Every structure is written in structure tokens, then in C-alpha cells.
Amino acid sequence: MPKTTISICVCSSGVRESLAYCLQSLQAQAAPQDAALSILLIDNSVHGGGRQFLNAESQYPVHYLHVPSPGIPVARNAALKLAQQLDTDWIAFIDDDEMAPPSWISRLFEAAVVNAADVVEGGVVRVKTLQGAVDMARAHLPAASISHLPRVKTAVTSNVLFSTKLLASPYDLMFDENMVFGGSDREFFMRAVLAGAKIVSAAEEPVYEMWPVERTTPYYTLTRWFRYGVSFNYRYRKNHAFFPGLAYILLMFLYKLAGVPVKLALLPFRMVKDKRAIYRTPATSVADIAYAFGCIAPYFGISLNRYY
Image (cartoon, rainbow, N blue to C red; front, side, top):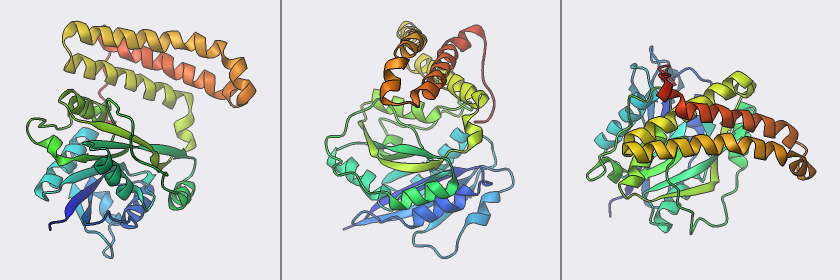
């Protein structure tokens, strides 16, 4: 009986120290029963710096592809095409600054089978240091149950497994290479759901992401959440008729904006249970405002063109 084939894709700038540890965590995976794993490293750097992280001694084959054209959706599409050339059945994505627990891919695949899902999205746990992420991934214990997982309307490529049938008719999906500002993964899976695919959330099967202090600055937070809003605008304008798309965007704008005073009003009550709320609530409120204005920014001619 032919084995099920799974390709795990890592798109990288090729310069992060974390990539070596990410690849090590993938080589330590326990493969699902009767499944064959391979790793696809898509090097999106100009000079092909990712080659230095390849290890000749590996449990699973590594397929390296240098894609110098900048843009995350470009690299993701290169991964899809390579997976198709390898005639793989399932594709997983993980970021190059994330570490996967040894049971990760087996649990996602089991979740897909048990829930009859086309896509399984796992969770992401942010850790301040690289070593901390490595240690937590190694120590992770699988969730007790992965049956009856909740359905969701989209997913992201930081932790996801999906069937390659999404690349064939009637789906014919590829990542939108116009979305250089980010969000092409959410848009990809949004189209999958609109075409009838089933996505479930396995939030208790996480990967562990290094989240350094520079990502906690106000500037980084504001620009990141503003980009999220711009991405929301793009995908709803693209995938819905004019008036329904406009309605979704305006509702999201109002929801994010109106939620800020509610959060702040409830802050004293939240602090009774969690003293850290005094720091988190103002930060999330500012992020919501940035997201809200990102939702409507394109209507005022504001666009984002930077590589993300």
C-alpha cells in the first residue's frame, strides 16, 4: 500500500540563526504511521544564505530551493510548486523562527483524519529567547484529544497542514503575490473556505516561536497591526462583491474601534484576576486602533508595498 506523503515547508530569508534549530526540530519529528516525510527549504534570500544550514546527515530528505525574488507569497508559491513536483499528498508550513514539538506533524495529520478536515491550523506560543523556544518544544506534551475540533474561516502558515487537493480543481489555489505587505496566507485559506474546504483549529498543538524584545516595541506593534487591517481590507474587497465587502470592512473597523473603550472600562475588574492586565490592555487597545485604521486606509489611497 503506497505511503501517504507529507512535505513540511519552511520559507526563510536564509540568515536567521533560528533556522538551524527549526530544521533540527523537523528532523526530530515522529512521522505518522505509514507516512513519508520530506522537508522543503525555500531560501528567499538574495545570495542563498540558507545553504549553510543544510545537514548531510538527516532522518528525512531535505529539498532546497533558492528563490531570490523577494516576497513571502512568492516563496510560498515556490514551495507549493515544488511539493506538486514531488507528488506529495499533504503540505505543512512552519516559520523559520519556530520550533516544532516531536509529535507536531503526527498530531496535525491525525487531527485532519479524525475531523475529516482539508486544513488543520495549530497554535503558536511566543517565547522570549531562542533557547527557551527550543526547550519548550522538546518538553511539549500532546493534547489529550484532537476530535471534534472547532471549524474556523481561515488559517495562517505559521503552523498549518493542508491537503494538496486545494491546489487542484475546483480550488486551484495559489498565494496572491500582490500581497507583499502580508496576509497572503489568510487570503489563501479564506478562498479555500469560500470554495467549500473545511478548516479546523488545533490550538493545543502549538509550535514555539522566538519572539525577541524588538518585536514588543510600540512601533513594531503599531505597524504590524496596521498591516493586518490593510490585509483584511484587501481580501474582503477581492473575494466579495462591492457592497458586502464594504459592509464587512466597516463592521470590522467599528468593532475594533468600539471595543477599545469597553476594554479600558473593564480594566479594573480584569486586574482583580490578572495584575498584568494593566500593561496588556492598553497595548491591545492601541493595536486594535491601528488595525481599525488599517481597515479603511486603502480607501484614502494609503497602500503598503514593503516586503513582509
